[in-house]
Length: 238
Ligand SMILES: NC(=O)c1ccc[n+]([C@@H]2O[C@H](COP(=O)([O-])OP(=O)(O)OC[C@H]3O[C@@H](n4cnc5c(N)ncnc54)[C@H](O)[C@@H]3O)[C@@H](O)[C@H]2O)c1
Ligand SMILES: [Zn+2]
Image (cartoon, rainbow, N blue to C red; front, side, top):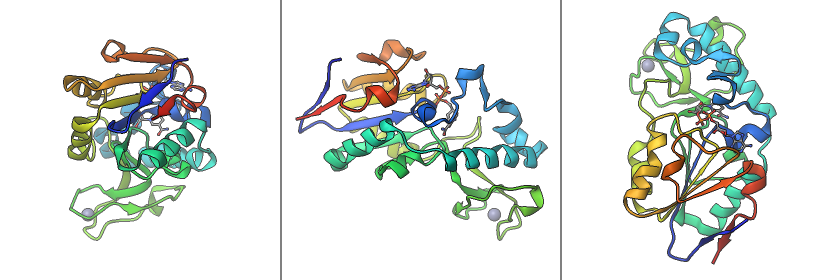
């Protein structure tokens, strides 16, 4: 396999999706007909689902927390943390994942654009910052409330809500000369558009995953393979 060379004036942005955590045993979501761990998105991951049945939502995310805590980073997470340690602030990671496997592998310059399993925030969006919350709830009565009286909900960007940190992500895409996208089906927006933004100013764009994503045509290079096998050793830092 050809290596991807990174020169001393390159800036790298990496976008990861559910596929990078697949080899850690966390199921992806399109893999099973649009179900996430057997659940329909509209039952567990939309503002309407939260309004209708907050316990169903917390039950789902409690199960995701349990599975996430039991999973371990795989060689793909480690390869990205190692790349960051070599490139320093010329590296930036944007993940769509809500697990913390990137952090646990050592990544530091990262944002979770779709939120984090390990936090909760007020359902009223009253301005209080998200709080750390790794509880695996057994019933809704255990779930805490914000000072404003609102119930705490998972710190997850539900479908139909605006992703987090978009200004910073846009800024990092604008100055990147290489974009590497790993394990995402190219079906969730705006993340599926990032490759187009990068191409607009001439960045090289590489996709890594076992099958071409929906937006495959926008990549200058597609590396077909599992992330944990393809990423270690893929980069040649000059
Ligand atoms: N681990 C997590 O945090 C997690 C898991 C499932 C879903 N989600 C959420 O659901 C949404 C899912 O969208 P998405 O595009 O990230 O994922 P997706 O489930 O839509 O697509 C997964 C992609 O990963 C690829 N893939 C499967 N195995 C792989 C491997 N070993 N190596 C590399 N790629 C592999 C598949 O070909 C597919 O293109 C995201 O917004 C995310 O927040 C998160
Ligand atoms: Zn509040």
